[in-house]
Image (cartoon, rainbow, N blue to C red; front, side, top):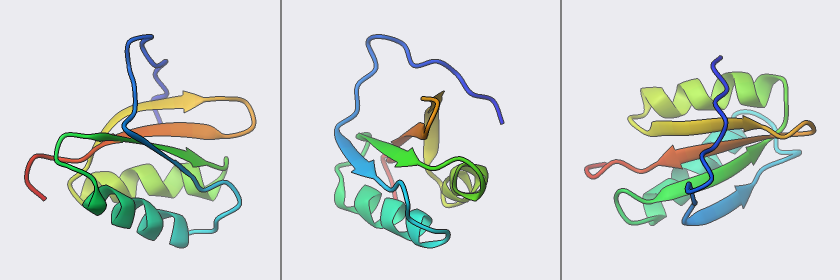
Length: 87
């Protein structure tokens, strides 16, 4: 997986802390939160290392969401996911 550093000007519209949440519940909660957000908004999702960071980004891409950045913050990962204009 390609982990890009977040540009300083990047900003999320909402934060979802899913550390400690198992798969596939973390994907389901992320998808439900994104569906509640306005089109083109960005959700920051905090995920644990291991299976969550390996599975959730790919599942979101397959569901039509755009993964903006993945930031490795040592103890967890921060995903920045954009809701598409049409979903």
